[in-house]
Length: 232
Image 1 (cartoon, rainbow, N blue to C red):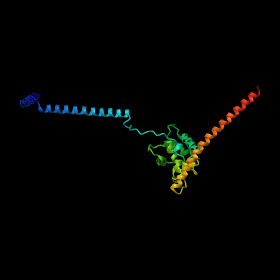
Image 2 (cartoon, one colour; image 1 turned 90 degrees about the vertical axis):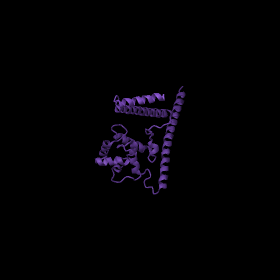
Image 3 (cartoon, helix red, strand yellow; image 1 turned 60 degrees about the vertical axis):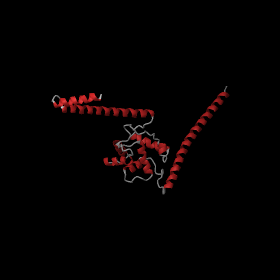
Image 4 (cartoon, rainbow, N blue to C red; image 1 turned 180 degrees about the horizontal axis):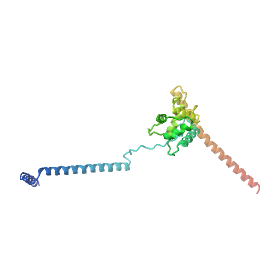
């Protein structure tokens, strides 16, 4: 095998010396062949990597690159507000979400402020969104809308800011809610706990009211049956 290879090399050199073969052309062909092999190997490696990645995801080993979608519950995250307050905020949000895409964009915010009697400049509207735009998408989600009222309740909004005007003109009273006026961190924590207890009490009251109504209905049905039997 080695002898055959050596013989081929000597044969090639002899042809080159006699001018029967162009060494440059052979070298280019060799280089092109090497490049084709390299490209093929690269493509094979990329395909293999993708297949391995898909296998890992199917087996639960790898992690998807897309961000996980967290379920947002306003009643548990914004415990400083009562259920009625949150429902009022949701009603206001949906009222101005004209495109019904669960966002308030710059034009919808512009309309909102005009309806509230406090029109803002284009820059002012952008600054309003920017102040609570946590995901930097240039519009307000319902959660970010609630942040406006949280900041208002905590006294974190400047008196002349557009968001402060929005919260003040919205007719949603948040002045006595949250941790506004708390002198220390611990006082704020106590107030937050009290708000949490109040929220739980509201839930219990709703449940008790439903039980009371069900019991009254049961009693009325029993009385009606007793009255029916009296006439038989």
